[in-house]
Image 1: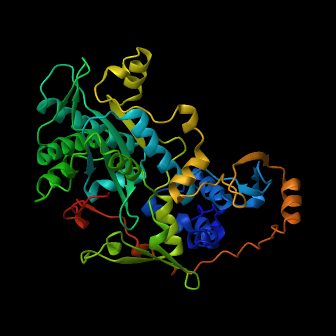
Image 2: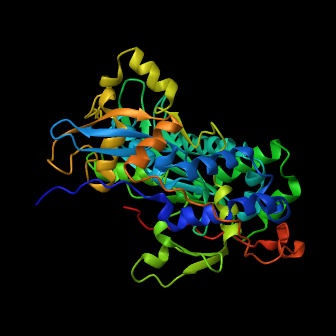
Image 3: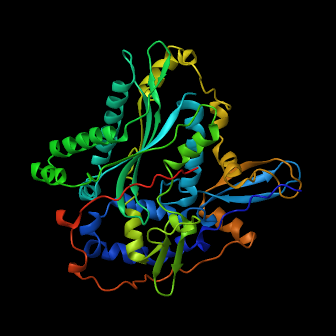
Length: 447
């Protein structure tokens, strides 16, 4: 049976691309009136991200020529935008690359766990309006975990290792800042030994995390003592700690799946339906695709402008770090061990299967891993292909595409605004009285 052939993607035919293309201009025009109160001011970087996405994968914007050295067969590969979260294709490549790199270069062959730390709804809006607080959220999660593990594991000068990914989205793209953490199930000693932690008390860890978050927000002047007093009266704290099953050192596939999951995209194209005539987007919940799932809302209808606003709230700022490394896995600790050539003294070392040079050959290897096809395999003779040129000059691009019959001047659609008129009272700023308790985070397995 012949191997499958890589086929160039066509982003313009996807409902997601069509929705953005149809409504982006109108969205920018009405953002201040309709969405600024709910999502904060419109960030200029978001405009850059969306414009780059609309150019991603389009041959008219430049391409590379890929040729088979055996039979001479050639095809054109469009440039990508390399944007995080907003572009599904580019973010998926980053997810796969991150999973490989983390397992080969960062984590050690010791037991790990997946932890999720979340906060009450009443506190989430502070992180929406001030994204700098997200780094504080990550630091609070780490300090809580470090304090807990140092208390339950015996030893001097011990420290766990953690990789913390900040996520801001919920099931229906609501702004829900929380932490997905890959944490060593124990602590590393200075002598190179590793001590496994006993059974973890999630309630104790939750109390520590709650204290860290409230202290941080109080110090930064985001909340006052009255808010803390109100939270103390709640039957449920609204904070939640989920802890997954132990991942053992030889469960490499589970570890890589978890590494991919913690930096997954904020939405799934497969769960989205764009109704172009009505200007609406239907988004199905993750639970709706699971068998025997009868709980919760199955889908939600957005008008297109509201959908884009929700999507934009999850776009990180330029240079904003959404994944951070702490303790034994911090950049400083890893750099110090490599400089001292002591990395190989740690027991159960996870040796890289590929050299750093090979890992940098991203595009072909990642496409092959995601879609189980090799884009550098010739569809004619099954020979090996290679990139022979990068075409960026507009005149040359136009000449080549016209010669191949691929130059199609697509008329840009007029801005569409099918949403109902804006009524200020329909979008009130949430108050303390709107909330009673935070829903529990689902504890089902993800791989």
